[in-house]
Length: 373
Image 1 (cartoon, rainbow, N blue to C red):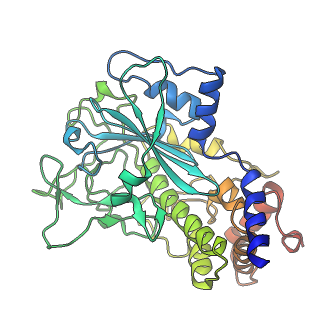
Image 2: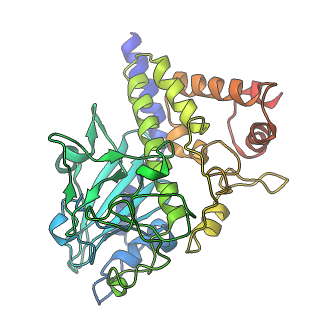
Image 3: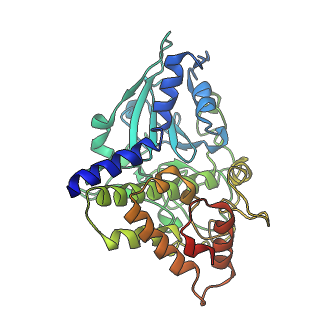
């Protein structure tokens, strides 16, 4: 009986959400409501796909480490471009056979797809979860990762220790360990990082404001790989992984208070690696990202950046507004709300956490009643 009730609750929660962005886009393509336009010159479906998915071009980041199944096409001269919003990311390799897509389904978690770069009368998205599981599978979930490696001059990861793995990075990782194998445009000040360099000289990365001269930027939609976009992507990927993990555990009718604590702690940026110098992006991403979220009556948003001593002005993840957070099993979501509220409402808090509480009271729907007091 209990299992039947659980199955019904899961079914009801699934019907409240409309699948991942690619599923929705495929339905619109099949019905003829929209059409993907093919652009000559090597970009193919990329510009049209980003437009239909509402993925901003200024989110572009470039990775020259060979960490894709299209690795043969990737090098420091031809890096892979990634574009993202809150629920989908698109990978583009110049001359590649596919566009690589990771879409966030509120119930299933991350779903991988490819879209052939060849022009077609009926472009079709092909699910790739099985093929991608080797790099993106963990404990039964399809996960997203941003990694840092020592890249060789051709982009191959250099792993000097037998059996060693690339370092997975997020907002907790010290800047000194981030961005190996990535182009990083912007001004981090004297803060050391591993970007823009290969293993021959990993301790002396170049401070780049443009990728031109290192890569053929004419083959991309933008000439930049913005440092703020990259930091945002790092935070978001692990945020998605934690939500997916907690949801899977509680949908299996199990409990895991440690997983809830880890999720809430991460959402609060409690273990964030501090910035010792201000960071400045080079594209319009810093401004456009902040405009995409809700604001309270005082004009404050969880998407406002700080970039002086930490990443965001108000220390709570903007992913609390995501469908994936709202679609968590009720028990998991309620426990997460309680952990967050206890942290945000503590009398020992400073102004920033009190501001988060005030922002959410005005901008977040379906908050528990006790949040309103």
